[in-house]
Image (cartoon, rainbow, N blue to C red):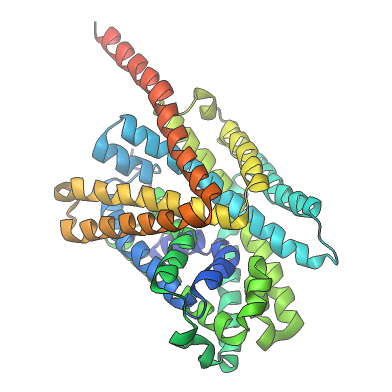
Length: 433
């Protein structure tokens, strides 16, 4: 029986906007400023353009392949169940662990501002709390995640709009002048480093089965949510760089958005943004843990992750939550914020490149323009190359961790996934015989 579609266009847009403004902007603003300087808004635009073009491929694929598997389903439809698709599906699962880690580190950075003195131990305690509590919530009541998300999304959007509106009159346009911009390369690198702040639009694809009038509403949801967030991020970047001296933003790089609220709103603004950042990152971790646990369940069902991840209790992917919890704790407590941002952005750029290739391969079936999807694939590949080129020389640790993710995904699928597919093949033809 066909699943009843209940999500409206507004609800679908909320999913996309909530996925993107989940906490990424609170975490990566300082990283963008450190590279792009006065051109931070341009960096957000460049990253947003890559996301917008890729959303075209997602829109076409989502209409044709409506499944909670989303990205996993698209790659499988284009390339089948093989080494490539299996490796990429595992890479996607690992990428969400990185995203959780990014949000957790941002939570700790903003949370630490409430203490008079901060220590590495306090930082790690806050990181661990940011992951442990949402995991417990997921294990107790998964419905709480979805019920609370819409309200939290509205709070985040309202807060960001307040910062924009209140800060307009304080903008010093001189700080935004081209002479204060970074080099062209550094602006592009900044955009790609913060690309992780845009990746959440693809969550709309996971809800495709539940969206009313999908042929109309799915594409609109992708385009409206991405364009809205691009506009929001550009305005936030203009207000932040235009109202606060760069030295202050860089000094408080990990909680730069809170500093950006001070010129117009004073100490109250700083406290308000910090509180909202804690709420935003906490809710984003909450939702991402559940989403990644469900993704692990789907991938395990296809034989590309251990069967233990298929274990459920009260329709909660129990072991998926447990594995996500454990691995996220390790990543978040061992990798620096800038490294997490690079790894997350590079991972999603790679995955989005393959999704664009999937749209090209399936273009006749999904009614997609090969030119647009090819241009999107080209941009994501160039963006990934630029980011990795810069990272190799500036942050070799982050580069090596990203390469390790690829190697782990490939080797696991080669040795484990191949054996599982062989077993499934054997069972299938044994039953026929």
